[in-house]
Amino acid sequence: MIISVASGKGGTGKTTIATSLALLLGEVQFLDCDVEEPNAHIFLEPHINERISVGIPVPKVDEDKCNFCGRCAEVCEFNAIVVIKKKVLFFPELCHGCGGCSYICPERAIKEKDRAIGVIEKGRSSNIDFIHGILNVGEPMAPPLIRQVKRHINNRTNTIIDASPGTSCPVVEAVRGSDFCVLVTEPTPFGLHDLKLAVEMLRKLAIPIGVVINCADIGDEEVEKYCDNENIPILMTIPWDRKIAEAYSKGIPLIEVLPKFSGSFAQMHTTIEGLVKR
Ligand code: SF4
Ligand code: SF4
Image 1 (cartoon, helix red, strand yellow):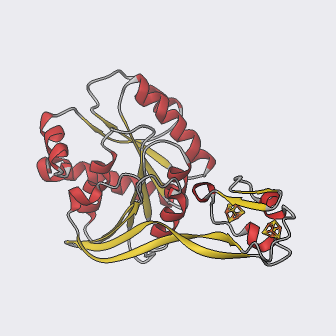
Image 2: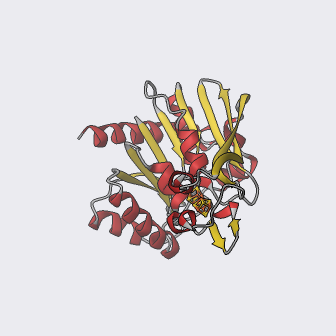
């Protein structure tokens, strides 16, 4: 079963929920797909034993062969290639590496070369198989790296995916194909607003969802009312606790600092299994 953990907004405690769930489950695979800011390794402290460079294929135009017909620019949805008179301009940061331009070129003037966008690191943390992607600084192309991280999913075991916060393309790429998505939120107007956006996205992807309310006693009851009206199960509520906040700042997982929550995480996993089988 693949369980992704996401949140409409940052700072809700998503990673502490994801890492605690992984620690509770034991023999499990953990994928940190928050490639712009991966931090699950701080909580799980894996021993990294493999590093793989990841690139995307980008065009390289041979102007000796090019007749400047402009077909490559017409086919590029991302305006990454532009033909001006007798010049082909290429903007690598806009290129999604789709290969459309080289496919369409009538003169076979375009070859592809890899442009590095980041790395994947694999390792082990006690009985957790750990994999994360690290996007190069300033690199905008997170989805291709996330796809490469997800190619390491082992279908014979349980997988936990930590997605980035928000509802943009990297999040869609991270949660796509999950059997279930846990949405972590806070009971505040901002939390509710961003939760609604995340719910909308996951419903479009037809992924079953449940909600964890973190800092459950600091806000109002609007998140609970919304979940009730929308028939979204609340999987767990976690009260605000200084010990949790301190542990987070030190990179200590929630169930290590407050083991009494182990039962709640186990119950959450049982509930998710039941909801997936339904
Ligand atoms: S499609 Fe090929 S030949 Fe035409 S402008 Fe682009 S690179 Fe040149
Ligand atoms: S590979 Fe795709 S995105 Fe990149 S320049 Fe060619 S058509 Fe555009």
